[in-house]
Length: 250
Image (cartoon, rainbow, N blue to C red):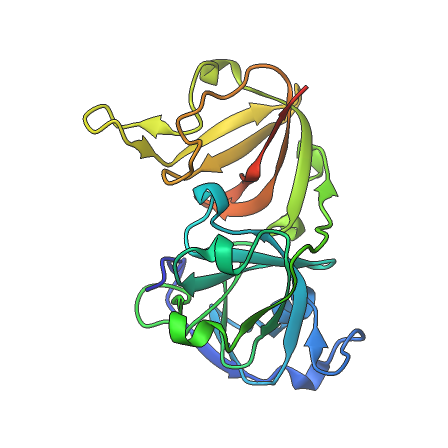
């Protein structure tokens, strides 16, 4: 089941959240920021019949995430953990979706907000079983419109975590020129998840690429580039995950 590890001892809370409905509450629909306000401790069961409407800004296309979709609205984004295969085929990138939150468990890892099934062990949430996924996640439009946040490295904030961002004028730091996006195990030849460091000449951005990524063994361009990605939380801090192979060389 789920892979999101606890950062502290698990505390489970059951709340309805209806005591403090947001201004944009319309016919049961709430925002990502409202969901964040529902989080009382490490893990919270959502009991109100509330829905989130948003756009899938990241999934397993190109293997950039594992059994996860990220749903975003104007207020932020949330990772949803799914125990299904071929997520890109079922929930295409940039499709508009409706998420029924009732019965799901809400957790956080650092600044990262996560929705999933009831935690059964050491993880914040488990993955939602395949026979339950279609009770909670519905595609409404195939071609949605993401709203990326164009920012410099210095402008990135914790509130941007799980949002789609565009960062310009990036090159690898001098020590990482000639490296691939991931490390390579010398014995097996397999890719190994790695964090690289890109700079805009003033600040440094952490970029994480997982071993399953289809372009994991590609070399990092040394020419200035623009990256399209989701700002994630990895290894205790913010790190960009490229989505849709969004690497544009100037």
